[in-house]
Image (cartoon, rainbow, N blue to C red; front, top):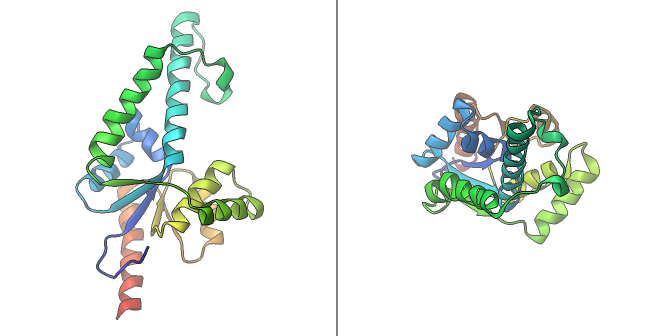
Length: 197
């Protein structure tokens, strides 16, 4: 993707930012989505992000049912896929959440593009996984951002941000805080201005 000095900064939105939006749990992330909705930034995420959101919402619904019926505490990390015994109505409710919170306001309006890894992207993910101490999920997200020409990677994962910042000199990692995103966007704009002058 060729970017001119006049084009908007392209953000890559990590899955944790979408979970903030869906669960209405972080005002900074919600403000960042509002900025995207207003057209302040172009944004992109991976189809893999949708898989992660669906999985996390299925875990949440399953665990909330366990809490209600057995008075157990919620521990999302301990839920295994085979243990999730969800009804078709519960599975449909996740689809409704994705449609209402992500597709209608962002994807269908063209504010966020859902991108798919190319062969080059998969090769990049394997390379990242081989040489960096990150999860396969993070390798896929980074590869998608790198091969799609994203300018700023927006995440709440401080470990991923640190590792990626140390390994990608020209690649900018931002947190979901709108001021932080604006700071990195301005760096990108200044760098582009120098290149195109």
